[in-house]
Length: 102
Image (tube, one colour):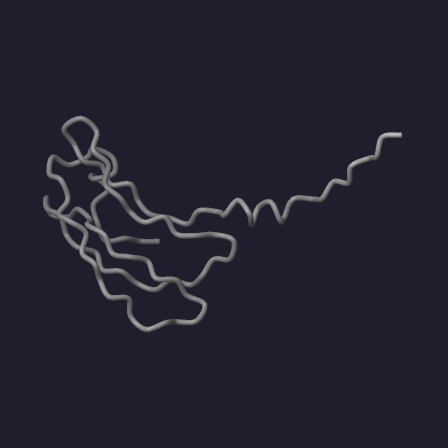
């Protein structure tokens, strides 16, 4: 997925804290899609708002939103991404029958 922001914020961090999150209204429902919320990116040495968007659902996964993390005197952007749900992976594991003790 190509997000329009500098990788500098991920790799080197930036000296400026992001502004408060913008709460966007979620557009009308789209079947088989999930709303990915917007976030503050970093481009041209400043924070820029990257609007939310619809993405096709990935069954067995959920979206972890982008977030900024402060380490010492810098802010680092942790990109969002799909996370595999543990319940989905458990369902795919082969079932092992237990032997009964006699």
